[in-house]
Length: 463
Image 1 (cartoon, one colour):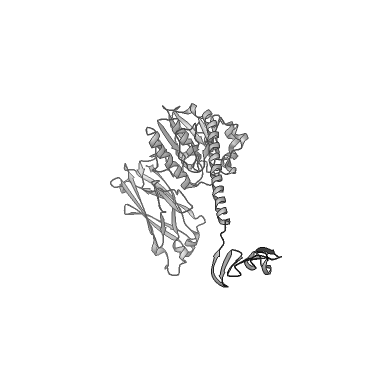
Image 2: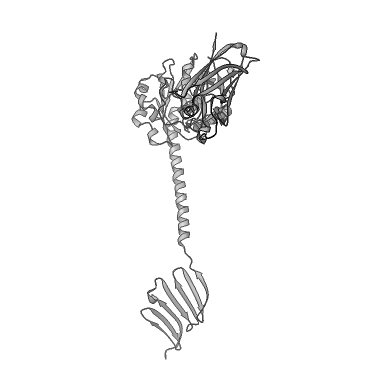
């Protein structure tokens, strides 16, 4: 008799020692997938494996079960980490490539303009409605934004453009305009904003900028210009680089109320918050690197109180809130350019009085025009609407708005006599006449939030 022998069959293998089975292994047992069974010392210990589970038996009784280790999740985790590292490397390589491209272009463009206008004043010209009020300041270097070259009362020295969607309808006129032109390319902008190569080649200079807010750099030779949703930011960044005495901001209304020629705004929709964030970045940047440069907003609208404000063609009057909406999408208006408050609106349940307070340096007769807006649903329900107006607690007018009003935008003109102005102060109150309306009971809850919204205001001195 053999001391030790191995017997192999189709679905099992066993080892014998001195005639006793010391090990027996079954595989493909009963056609079960991924199944194996091993028996030791004539069945004293049995190990069964199927799928992810391993079961141990002693004398036929199961003593415990454990799960097979799987290396697939670990491999996936390692793979994901490797992919993340690869993406990081690609991003870093892309940044290096962008840096090299910027450096290659900007070192040829900007060094000649560094401190070039150190003894000059610069005026940056936008295309907002307030441009109509501007009387050109003499002996300034004028930098135009987009189609500011169409404003024939000002001769531009420079023209900045980067938004192809906005400048495309006027590009032929821009090409024909005689000045130094800077056409930009976005490093992070969508394709429809990018100026085509054949147009870029017609400019005096090309440059790179970033659409999203980035920290402006003092070294334009190796860094891109800030854009933050407005070409005026790039123009201001460049103007600071030339180190003038003063920078005037004109027509940079920073809202969606149109242009100086009453045409609708072209180009990509303005993101007011993105734009304002860029201006605040530039303000801080100027305070650190160009503290001797004064930045002045002429007749500011959306930029009110961000930089130094001047109203050269208006009365010396200040009002604590800003009349034109900085962002009409969320019904908020800017307060000194620093924070946001609920829009001033006459409402039937929440606010029935709007108070405007003015500081006036001299007594004079005033004409104040207010543009307001209401909702036809409200007028229809109320059968008309009455507004009482007071100046320093003196009743001066009562406005009746019939429910047949065709245009929901309407205008109120007030003549304020100088006798009503006390201690250089004028307070105007707009009050809803509650007697003009029926009971609030049964009013649609949506209508209760409606009222009269203030759109804009114009004020001037009269005889």
